Length: 200
Length: 220
Image (cartoon, rainbow over all chains, first blue to last red; front, top):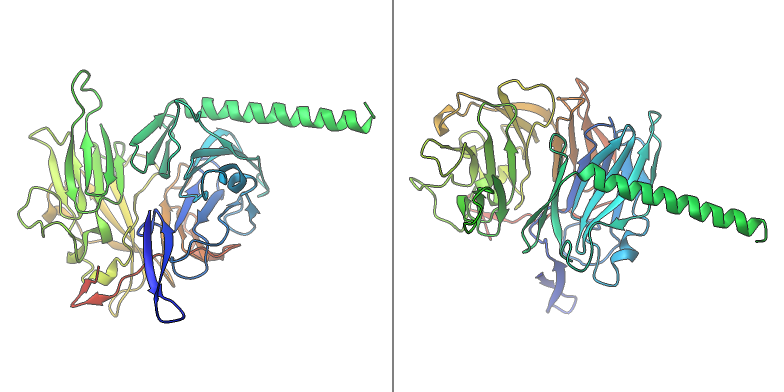
């Protein structure tokens, strides 16, 4: 972690925790390798220069090259809040099917994935975020500052702060399983709602 | 091979040294910032690395004149442990004089990720303008014949921008000419032959730290 100083109102020096990437990028961008016009963006909260630790981190998605946007943050901050601020620092798309991708996000607590469904008309839907890997024995609970998806090798490479570089092989298969679990849980929730409506 | 950037250099090493301790070679010294690899568009794979400010202005390493490393920006072609490997420094001050050309500590560069293999590697970066050049994206075309610093050709302007660009993508599977830039308030999109068009973001992100300059160098 790093800190930066600036003059306080009384003329003294105020120290502010500016987090782990005070000299890093303040924004991150991902472009879908297969779906034209589908981009995701995130960054440190603004406006203005990077010197504060406040604001809410957000992830935004467009499926029409920036004409309209969907807030894809959903549960990400809440999922990480017990450990730290989310600090979304890297994004990458993993194509699963036409107009369906896994959107990966590097955070202070590892890599999270959301399933993104877009359409040729430019609409977009996102699922709640799920952590990739296990807390015990799997991917470390650490800041992920970069993510790269290799379409030819179907691998995701994650660069961490101090815990090395990690490779996820058969990435589309692993993330496809997240998609299937999401569909199952969505259907189960739908079934419960239907049962409740019937008074069961 | 595996390569990466960390806080005191950009390194590359082999993954197939089973039974031996892993050992990587540093190729760009200073604060390691960005890396990229291309094994498709040229005959031999090239591993690119950069230090802070794309190697321009102040650095905490030496000036690298005559040193074995690549200075602040360049690529290694082939296995760096092979005597035949080529180390090619890309001295950006030749083309973009003044440290202000690259104002961000982590200055992003990209290799084109789209289109057909052409034996021409396309390297892009955003450059801050001055009285003689506009703010904009610039492209180097590095074919197989680029074997030394002197072979690096002059860049060409891909598109002008009104303000800074903090991250960008260049080329995709469906459009080798795709260019998407991002700063704290706007997305900049060039799709195919269209001009670079700004699109407002739905939120405002933070701007990176930009240092002051003294005698043409950053004040760290």
